[in-house]
Image (cartoon, rainbow, N blue to C red; front, side):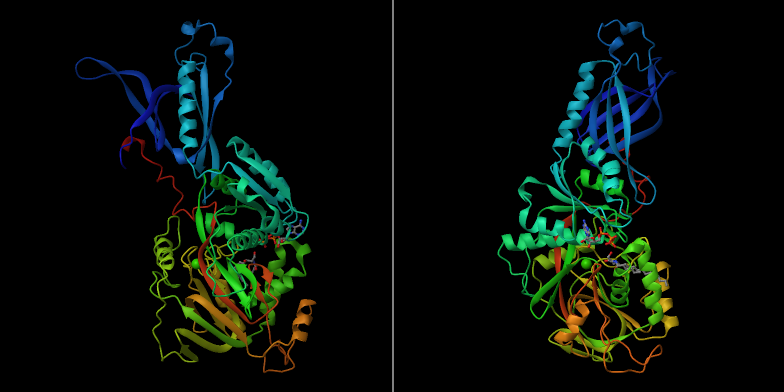
Length: 557
Ligand SMILES: Nc1ncnc2c1ncn2[C@@H]1O[C@H](COP(=O)(O)OP(=O)(O)OP(=O)(O)O)[C@@H](O)[C@H]1O
Ligand SMILES: CCCCCCCCCCCCC/C=C/[C@@H](O)[C@H](CO)NC(=O)CCCCC
Ligand SMILES: [Ca+2]
């Protein structure tokens, strides 16, 4: 580590022991100094250092405040007779609040209080640390917060008031809080009304559905402000400047889990306070040159579409609705016929079968993001040996019967599946992993599903293939008429007149629905394009390991 010039160094009291406390532009460190005198060569007596060093990055200091220590001892200057090493002898104090890493990617707010002999010294410490914090320009000062009172277990307001608001106050962040009154309240407010110039970021308290509202509000607003037509599938979208924070209070919390490593409100609040930034890809979904929706996590047809369609009717069950509908959908074992065309992502680093994972500071995201911004031409090799597939102008075309067609723009890791639908997918590489699960036996499909929850590779099965792509299209085998779409919008299950040979029943539905980040799309035929790093989150990606060992070594300062 490059040696940084010291800004301050003092001997201060911490819990009745003397510590050598030091601050430079990067680190605040403290190390115990022994009171016992040790004889060293030359007969001089020097204090020697004992105990372990502690260090905290300045970038992870949340706040510093002067303590109002009992003033009885400090005003009359007669404290010389006080015990030598007690807080009474050191009557001025300041507390530093900082990020402490706990188990499984959780962050907690920890405090350390240093006592000083003189008030001037105490103020000097507080002022210098404050100046350091003010210099951290990536930290938000004003936030716009939307709370969904009905997400997940309906605890959004309580979670915000009890766990998050006190931390924002501690870090001197001002907030404007809106408790939503109906679905799409946050989206519409962001898109049309919100005075975005007043804020350094927007925060949602809720689940993936609330996050999706934030994305739709912000992305649409940004395109409108820049005169970009969202209805054109080929249009290059303008990235959003405001970052989005997620305080998890939903059922799946997949975006939070996959960008932070845990769905924990305090951890997310601390990532917001320290001003983290994580870019994310966004997929645009179109039907016949009409914009439908954006997706950041899962676009799923077949299994995940059917699970969602069924679970939406059981919202009253809370998060358990997904288990219930998942089991039911598994038993129905429907497959769907159609054509998938896709543009493979070439010239990029990484494949969906990699063992490496997208982690904080991901090199692959940085490299591929750079490539994308340079508008590298798409080159596609042909592979005539692949059955059932064709190449047309760089596009691959696959027809078949599918139990599931999933596009994962990120891993989709969540508490249900900590490695996710596509464990090697990247948050910000400009691609999505297209997973095709062909018709197979119930037993094999169960094996495939169960592998999402174990160390075994869910793609290493003959009926599963996965491609990293920039764009894709899906066309169901049978065209949907307008009357069928009307039926679908009325929430009725659509069955084709065409009976097919099916293990469960003689009449199988011709169409599934697309699950787009937890919302049902009104069309089965869609065109999808990935927009590299279109949005930014208050997150840093999953940190490589619980960083106890990674604490900076103050001795190296
Ligand atoms: N005040 C409200 N009343 C009713 N619905 C709302 C309100 N505010 C937001 N919503 C909608 O509720 C839906 C679900 O919210 P949210 O994502 O917070 O929780 P969830 O569905 O339990 O979690 P997940 O999306 O992680 O499964 C969202 O699609 C959102 O549009
Ligand atoms: C029989 C044992 C089966 C075990 C299978 C476990 C597989 C779990 C994979 C989980 C993938 C979640 C993908 C996330 C999608 C979100 O955008 C979306 C909105 O919150 N959630 C769902 O659609 C909710 C979808 C919930 C699906 C279960
Ligand atoms: Ca991606």
